[in-house]
Length: 311
Image (cartoon, helix red, strand yellow):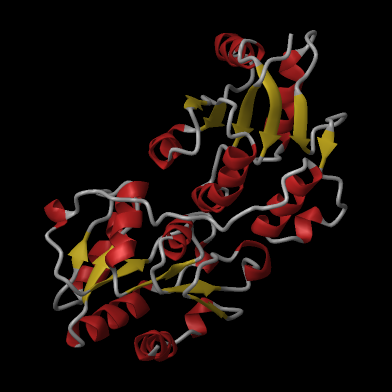
C-alpha cells in the first residue's frame, strides 16, 4: 500500500547536488506536512542533514552487478519506505531503473524520466537545458511551480582552526582528472596567487586530497599561500566562501558551492564544457570562457577581480 512519505533521489555530483538545493526547498514547501527522505551518496549526506530540508537521509551504496545483498537492501528500503511520490532529480539510467525495484508492488507517483512514470519530464530538449531550468520544468510538470534559487547562507561552522587572515581568496585549481582541458594551467594560478598576496589578499588553495600536488606547485612559487586541500568538507567550503573576498577556479564542483554561498566567483571554462548547460549560478558570478584555457592570461582574471572590487 502506498503511504504519504516523499522520496527525493539526488546522488551527485557536487555541482549538481548544490544546484538541487533550490528544487529540494520547493519540494519541502510543497509537502510541508509530509516526511521527506533523501536518497543520496555519502559525500552529500552531512550537507543534506544540516540543511533541514529533509527529515531523513538514506545513503545509496550504488550496488553494482551481482552484489545481490546490496540490491536487496536497496529494494527493501524503497518498498518499505511508505512513499507516495518520488522526485528523481538525478534522472539517470540508474535512478530511473530504481522504479523497477518496487515490482511487484505498485510504483509510487514518479517525477522524472523513468519509462511509464506518472509525471514524466518529456521535453525532448531537456538535455540542452541548464540544470536549473531543467529541474524547474520537471517540477512544474509535477505541480510545483515556485522553485527558489539554491541557498547556502544558512551554513555556519567554526573556521578558527584554519587560522585565516581577514582578507583571503579561494583558489580551485583542480577538476576532473580525466578532463585536463578543463584546468587552467597551474603556473597561471601561481602568478595569480602572487598578485593576490601583493595586494593584501591571502591566496587559499582548496580541493580534494588528490589535488594536493597542484597546491604544492602553487605554494612552491608563491611568497604567501595557504594549502587547505583535503582539509575541508562541503560545509567548511561554503562557510569559507561566505567570508572570502572572491573565489577563482575551474569548471568544477567547489565553484558551485562558492557561487551559491554568495562569494564573488570567477569560473574558468574551456571549450571542453558548455557554461550554457552547467555554469554555476549566483548573485556574483563571472564566467570566463575561452576555447583553450592555456590561452587565458592571469591579467584577464585579475581584471575580473578588480571589477568585483569596484562594485
